[in-house]
Length: 291
Image (cartoon, one colour):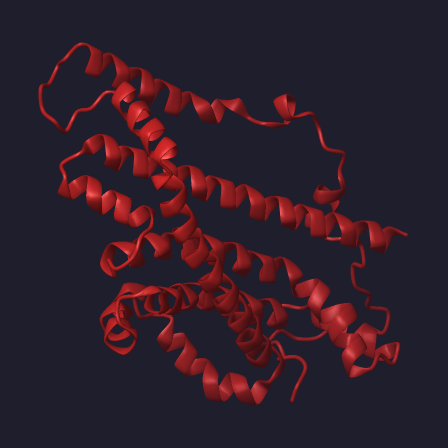
């Protein structure tokens, strides 16, 4: 098994060639002192939502349209309170998050394993790489008919679908991150007579870590989006996607808008959590590297 895929670019011939051993920019950003929340957050991003809500409120208050499609923010707030008080929101959201977490973990672990095999083994790259490149071009939702036939419409089918959604970006970014490790890093490690495990642990994985985290971050996003798609297309069971279906079937736009807001807020929270974990890990690695 080869540890590194050779690049087509010419190698440095100079005996005095050296590599940049300074900490990556992501490490340095993570280690910078945190500013207070009010000054670190760019509140300009809230302008558009506030303006949109104000226009929505004004149009509904002016009774411009009597259509049931136009509901007021007050109706959405009342529906939100009713969903929270009855426990329906907690039940639906917990079911969706449980599926998302299961699919994300399974798909991420599988992606890390497959991406590492493709990244470290030239034989695996030649034998499996072309098939994987073809496989990832197939639309994710094209697998739903096949998954529903094999696994039914229950939670097992949904978790399989979510695992597939998380597997693809993690595999691709893990493989690409390992292949993108500069050749100079490998040569320096060999000059210091690093063992194979030392080369992987101390050189290749730290250099590939930003790309791996990008794949995991995308897997978290894709698995959450796939959760809603799976609940909408594989309709058995509860979930926030089924809340949207109930709202559309009952012609309750307040319930539909409430579900959309919950989906957006949950996605934002998952994104913020992933960024916080990434910053914490990079800050820890930066502090360890500078000691």
